[in-house]
Length: 200
Image 1 (spheres, rainbow, N blue to C red):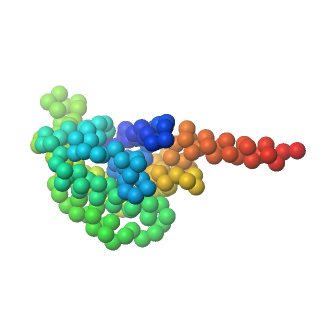
Image 2: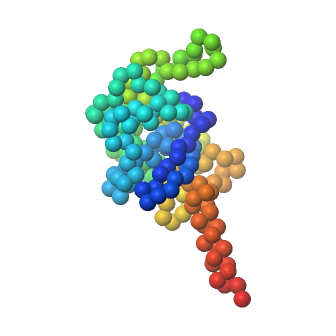
């Protein structure tokens, strides 16, 4: 997976958007919507929406077989499991058994197969490119993330009202915010106002 270009633009239902880089494609996928309170952020309404998301860089997995309603349901189940696992890891809690089982089940399917182009300078995915393969590839990336050297760098945004989760891939490992332009700047503004309020 070409994980050197992660990140997507997230849109707030109340207005505004910002670029959020979760540091891994599987975590980017975890932020495409959700259940309960997070249903307002849903972007995968129809099977075609999932196909469009998977076709975008960096995954660039253009389905050769259209996404079905059943596959969309499976994708949302995996998405929730990745979300739950990332938050548990960020809080240094044991991962829920059902979450682990869901990720393992998705990973058990055949993954996408990389294929070098005839010019030997670019790569794509060998056809056929199916949704189950893409989901397997995402699940396998999450397994590598949770079991690898960056597991301790999975974090939730330090803002007290932002649930976005990311893997800190920065060299110093000092990332605190989902995005400086969003929660980072809000924190700076609150800190400045607090100082001004206490200044004589």
